[in-house]
Length: 211
Image (cartoon, rainbow, N blue to C red; front, side):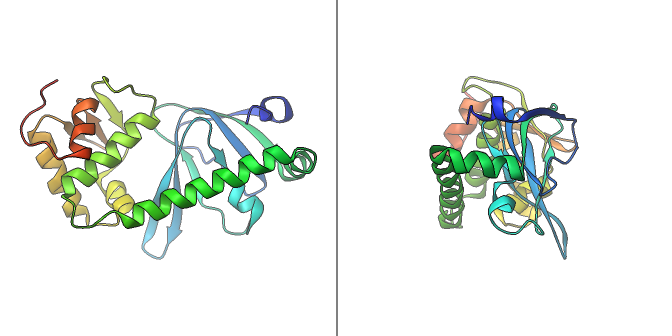
C-alpha cells in the first residue's frame, strides 16, 4: 500500500515497544513484530508481522476494545507509516481499490490461519518446528543461503504458535541441534543453515547439515 507513504506519518518503535493503540492503522516498512494477546493463562503468541504488513486493521473494522498487542521484536526497531482512524476512513471512501487490498489482506490471513489448523498433528514435531523457524527466518529477510540467523523467540512462544506442549518443542529442538540445523540460546533460536532447515520442513532430513 504505497499510498500510505504520502497519506500517513512516519513513526519508529524501539525494540520491545508496543505498536498498537486501537486508534490507528499502521503499515510496517522495516523490522518485524510479534502479535500477542492476554489470556487467563498469561500472554499468548498469535503470529508475526513484517515489512508490507498492516497492523490494527481488524480493530479498525471490528472491535477496537479488543486489540492484540503488536510488539517490536528484539532484533531491530520497527519503522512504519501511521494513519489515524478518521484519515484511514476518508482515504478508503475515496480509494475503493485500497479497500479491496485491505479486504484481500484480511482474507489471506484468515486462509493462513485455516491452513495452520489443517496441518496434521501426526507430522514429526521436528518438521513442524522447522517450518515455523524457516518461515520466521524468511520474514526477517534472510535469503535461502543464509547462515546463523537469530530468531528472537523463546521455546514457550514456539510451542504457543504450534499449540503444543513446551516439552515437545524442547525435544524437537534438541534433535534439530544434533543435526547442526539450529542452536538454541537464551530467548532466541539460531538457525545455523536456512537451506537445510527448509529441507527439514518439507521432508524431514536425518543426519547432519550438508550445506
